[in-house]
Length: 397
Ligand code: ADP
Ligand code: MG
Image 1 (cartoon, helix red, strand yellow):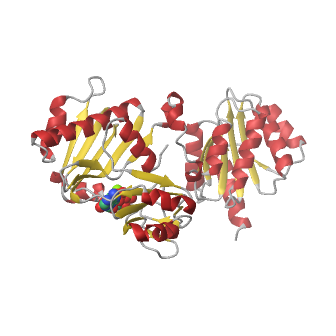
Image 2 (cartoon, rainbow, N blue to C red; image 1 turned 180 degrees about the vertical axis):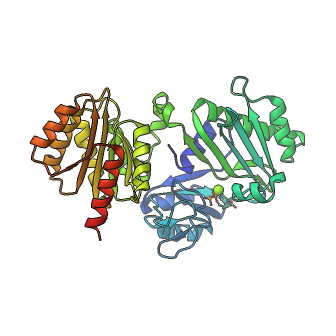
Image 3 (spheres, helix red, strand yellow; image 1 turned 90 degrees about the horizontal axis):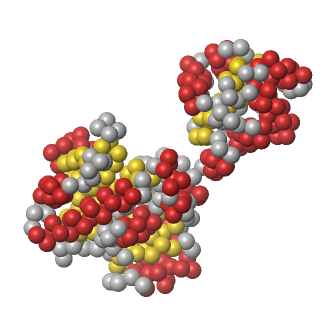
């Protein structure tokens, strides 16, 4: 799960990490008061979307820059052009993201920019701190072209961040002077504590800046949380912005379904993540394209199956459905009942291929056969995938 920059900065503050002042707004009525509350005669207007590269982004109507340094007198006009507009950046894909929140931030006189991130390094089972002298730039590009500008420090999760590591990173970034090292320690220790205590998968500051008056500040802030630990953090859950997520995925979550939208046209309903992955692979193998990943889980009941159908059908790209269930804990007759109920409830007209196997399979097949529903049955995974791919291809010639 991701959060917005303004929310990440509020968390930074909680952990004693310096950020510049700012105010988040959601409507033009709030603009003037927010602008007036900030010091100086310039401010930075920042689009809040769950994607980076906003500064270099372009809006759908051609307006350039999702992050703008402006005189206070022009700030409200600039903000009006951004709010409600669609921002397209390198990370949003061509469809872009609608800007529903803006962050007015105090303008800062920048002397130097740095890059800093903390993330899970799966290869070493440690936490990696990545620091770079090339701030504000694409870190992947820096890693490729000038790897000597990057220092990666692995932190053992059992012993935590050690003082020598803080110093080594600090010297690398040029913060050797006593006063700078003190500021740097507060930044990295605070961010590490945040990362650890909130079960983050990433904390990224790009750029971390040194201001002209010698202060270290986080100018940008990106935080993502490990979804598997979300139950431990209701306070994090409260930061969730449904506006930024696929409504189908949120709906699926409510019913304990693991759903991820994709851009193909064959909807898949499968039980078990492994089987769901193989089903997607085999659809691809026969030349089709899956519209989603959907694992209905081991214990789905009739209602969950009906909901799963509803969610699949909300995707207007879907041209056919493949149900592939292996009844272990999940019984085939329950799936059959769900399929029948769902087809009747939602008035399904799309082609449907069903492959059932496992516990109570005979009963399930019989129920489907007697239901009068128009569907194609299949007796193996390959057979099912081949059939749905062919049907969808034929119908959409
Ligand atoms: P993104 O990474 O999404 O493009 P940033 O918050 O990093 O957004 O902003 C892009 C650039 O804008 C920064 O690298 C920095 O140079 C400049 N900038 C951002 N905030 C401020 C600020 N408060 N004062 C001065 N310049 C800023
Ligand atoms: Mg940035």
